[in-house]
Image (cartoon, rainbow, N blue to C red; front, side, top):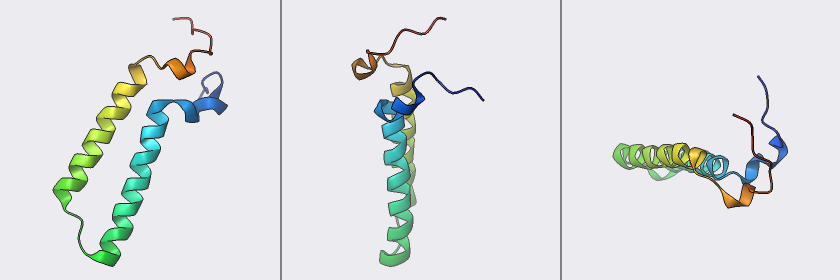
Length: 74
């Protein structure tokens, strides 16, 4: 496995931030269902689907906040 250049700045990537949001929401849904009852599976699936699509799209969209990084050769 080879890390990307400037991997320590990965938290600035929108795709990484959205993935973290997904993890937090999944953890919250798991905790919520054990204390407050059942989380609707349809809502759970829709939220995960939307976050997954957002991560994929944000991975290929140019992000100005990362513009200070040099372009990668293709």
